[in-house]
Length: 165
Image (cartoon, rainbow, N blue to C red; front, side, top):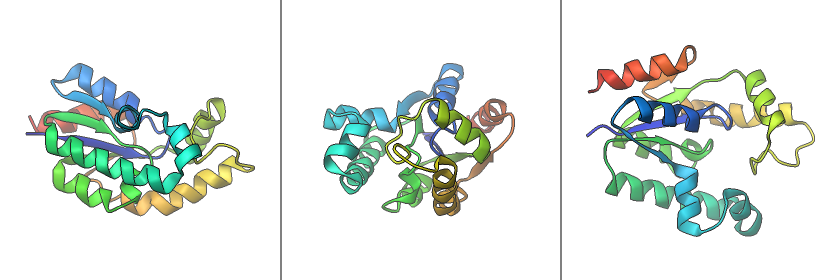
């Protein structure tokens, strides 16, 4: 059984990488945010807006544990904050292989500026400062990942995953 988890900042490309890997392997792609939305029957932004971040984080952990218990041979893209809350990074590392996508903050800023639907980054006066703050809070959790991807991310990720086959 090989389960892989992609972690990283919002807009780092976790879902895109997960879909790419799934299309080049026999791993099922699972997007944690989409699974949460299916479970709660609300968009992530609506959950944050109507029920708050604390409720979202509890549901996130519950859904993550459910996936780990029921599924196998998957590549899962986490939410940007997943590893930071509720000891999820330990859960991830104890349940499979973690891959951290480390993207430069300037690239994150550019991506988020183009399309900002992310609840924690919406309505922010200084987006660059907020991205730096979140990065600094979470980086120590991301760095607990088994593998660190920072260049030629697709090739690096496929090589790592194939080494476990």
